[in-house]
Length: 154
Image (cartoon, rainbow, N blue to C red; front, side, top):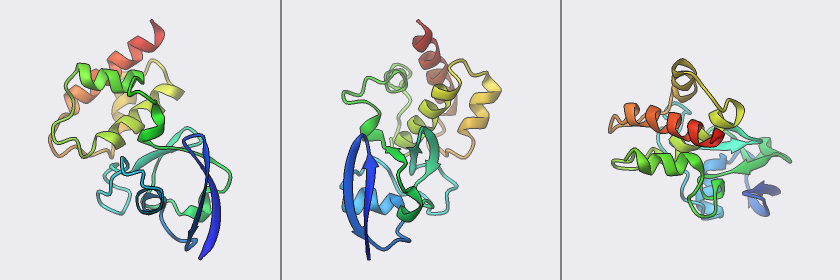
């Protein structure tokens, strides 16, 4: 066990865990931030996506020791009131079905729009590749990203 000081959602947190502990379990089990979901455990489904210094990463394969002084943002930290443009567009387009993958989808989409405010269809598909939705809401996901993109320039 080791003590790690990590910056999550703008707050400094201390956790005493094994250095090889994936951030997914630090978030869920130690910090009770349960919006980030376990899906596959091998970084293939996207349910566990968080931002690491603004870049979408899979938290199931990111160890706490690799985080160092980087800023982590979870779905809970994306916006205080659920009013991030991507979250609003998700509701507008009725994206969630079961909802399980949605936090990861939203985190991937918001990271894309932060680095590329007006992505093409191909850029959206590339950025969202690997975010699996068992309910098959991919068409609505793409439409919501486009709406969020438009609202960011309005």
